[in-house]
Length: 176
Image 1: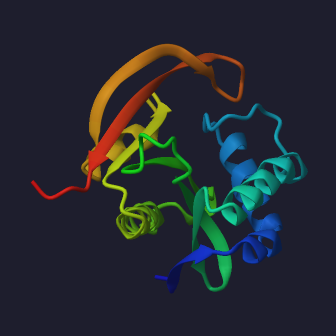
Image 2: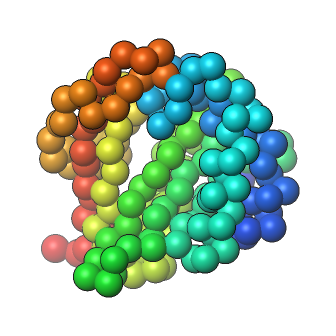
């Protein structure tokens, strides 16, 4: 089992990690993940997206967390904390991405745990996300204790252009 490091990136670290982040996003899209992009999707196609993430991290609207094994970034998740004034307690979980070559190592769990810790640090206790209905991620979120809210059919497109529904989840971090 390789050594895994989970850490939050600064804007300059995010910029330095652009090639790895672009490779992960491209790999996930080419693997069929409905994460907002269409196939074919090359690492070069992913650069503008990640440049936007750099800006969001610099503006403190996004927390970018990565998973590294042997110094290589192989997974990432984002916590959107730039919410409206009436939502200071909420955050959006975005783009849980794990490169196909690193699946099965538990990176999703480690990234999600880190995102929840970051949410608590930022005093966010309601987390929300959406994922493609029927995708492997859908069962992962349920396993991690997220509550299914509902499904919107034909919400987005899969990378191949076919329609997919989107399942919405939330998780409360507040003590009962």
